[in-house]
Amino acid sequence: MTTRPFAHRLTARATRPFWQTLWTIALVVAMGATLSACETFSFGSKPTPRTSETQGSRPVAVTPTQPGEAPPGTQGNSGQVKVALLLPFSHPDRNARYVAQSLLNAAQMAMFDMGSRTMMLLPRDTNGTPEGAAAAANDAINSGAELILGPLLAADVRGVSPVARAKNVPVIAFSTDRTVAGDGVFLLSFLPETEVTRVVDYAIAQGRQRFAALVPATPYGQRAEEAFSAAVTSAGRQIVAVQTYQPNPQALEPAINAIAKTGFDAIFLPEGGAMLRSMGPILLVKTPNASQVKLLGTGLWDDPAVTKEASLIGGWYSMPPQDQRQAFATRYQQLYNARPPRIASLAYDAVALAATLSRGSAGHRFTREAISDPNGFSGIDGIFRFLPNGFTERGLAVMEIAPNGQLVVASPAAATFQAPGF
Image (cartoon, rainbow, N blue to C red; front, side):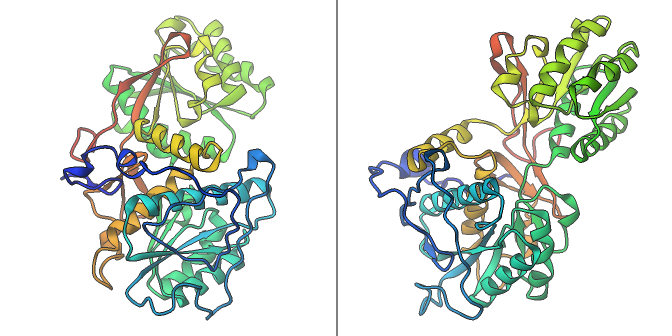
């Protein structure tokens, strides 16, 4: 099976990267334009740069239209395919508002890049509450939305789901909470289970036999440990020790002492930031034959400060391929004068996916079967596909921390779902 690409067109002209083909025009657009949720966007229009959070502005609040009120610009456009984008633009938390605006920015970029004039995006504000999300979903569907992208927060997804199911409208959400997936709700997010399985499988392929894990006593740690245990045991390898610890620096040394001499040749560390940088040196001192032990991590390791920690040199962790991601971040910076949050690419890929599927006929373009096409899709973060249970499977690379903080690709990401491991 081949991957169904949507981030660029498979034509002779578009064999160049899509950003080279489409971004040859000058980026001379006024900054700080105000956006209301009743706006709709046609593909092919240039994304509008906005004043960024780093410049001291607040994210633009987006107010939903009233139920039954047609968004401006949609009247008489019965041939348009309408897709909703639900985000917490007026969430009480400032960071949540910033992330919501960043996702909208990335969505506008995708609309321009895809170049289709048959699709319209309907942004709606969830207010960061389940009730607000349900009202936003209902309003968008009444306005003609055939597909919902978002929400971002798990509680908001729970508010949207029954409304969408009642109208048979699929949802492609950005939450990482697996409990909200299924029955027409698909999660386009970076699930820790996928990252864990990829790096453990690679370690096993490289001959590692005896595994240990140091796991923070957090919901993320629990999910990561469950995925780790499943991956190791399904491959017939041995788990010699699993030790949890409270997420504070004082808990690290006792936890490491408890497992340091259990004879592992690989240890899983689903941790990041200062905690991981503190953990590395203690492991180096306390673990016999530490130079022979392979350290395994998750996407939390993708941090310049982490990769410069000498005790982590040689460690492996998994992450999406970076070539298109870096180009996306550069273009986003040019437009919005800010680096995009890590998850901004999800909105880009969601809109591009919607544009690809929108070419189908009414009633068939956004079916669950079309969304969960086993061939998969190709986006900013590499290949991905939705499973029938609503989870996302991704093609990830395994990175190795080399001396001086450099990263090398230990195992490249698969280009299709026919590759070994799928």
